[in-house]
Image (tube, rainbow, N blue to C red; front, side, top):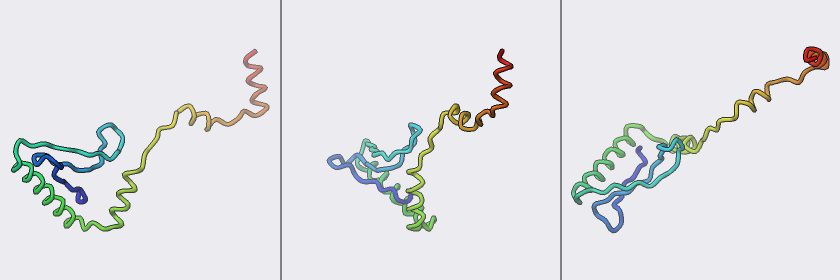
Length: 108
């Protein structure tokens, strides 16, 4: 994502941290991530490459403030499933008095 930033983890030059949206559990939420490398050089190389990619994405996408605002609002949307029985009950119309009489005579 063009807006993503990676920083060195304070107190450990071999680690990087960043903040991003995560959908791994089926729910979109903001998470902090951290990665640790075997060497300082690998960490710096990773950080530099991520910065290079995000700058490239920002230039090529022509990202606007309106687009960023819209994307942030979309990320906050959730979809909830309603119980199917509630939907069926809501669609059923009440029986008329004639239909009630027919139904009661059929049951006898």
